[in-house]
Image (cartoon, rainbow, N blue to C red; front, side):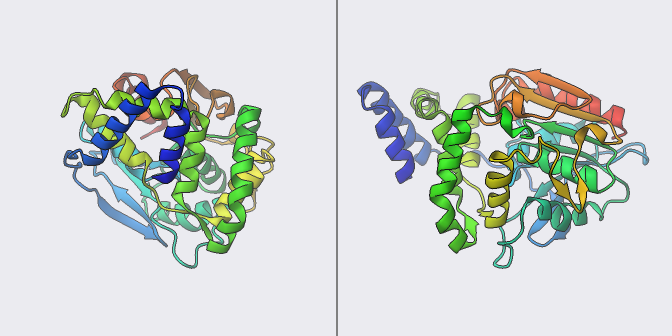
Length: 340
């Protein structure tokens, strides 16, 4: 909260009306009654702190591949099951897919050395080994990066990435400089802790577009209580403001190797001793990106066999009112063609 208030004060120093409305919106957000969450799915498998959650869709043909959705390590996985009305997972199950969700959990005391590659080999692959057949992987944001690493190191029936960072030299130079400065300042403390607190990562997201962050709280001040827009704002902001810490090793690999050196885009990332080359994957692949994404610009996403560009922002691709027609349904069609 102190970091957010500092940003709010700084961004509204010349606009007292925006400051007033943003504070009203912030207070409404803090005091609002949250709608009941959707029913919790069953735990299907576990590996360390990670869990594979089963949404029990009707798979129909027993030969169809299970569909495993992989969220980012940053923020909770529930963005893919945000509410009864805004749930990609429940849309997939309603359309006959046998759907699962990875919940990375919170890193344990001995997990500080677990980097991104190890999240694939020591968490994700063991979870998938519990399935009866190779799955189709659907990765969102950093989860898409990990999905590509997993498909290179293990068997997959298909891979779809959504707003996944891969070509890190596709990020604007100013954004990469800002991220490098954030990591440079935070790295010594995080190394001593063994993890990176969510607050540090969140401050980096805010810094990409601070004015927009303030403006959306000002807009919330005028939303009718209980309206779809009101409830969606609560759900998205609760998700965005929560999350387990990131292990130090994962953060070091993300910031030092991926952002600073573009190891993924340059073809130098290895998982389980295998070089990850999305173009060489022997399965159907889909990349969905957004031309209005400030978190992962379209130019930073992988170019796969089927690459599609929307204009729905980073989170909007998953949970906006247009997501069902723009992403959920085309994704379901791809999964069906790939065998899921």
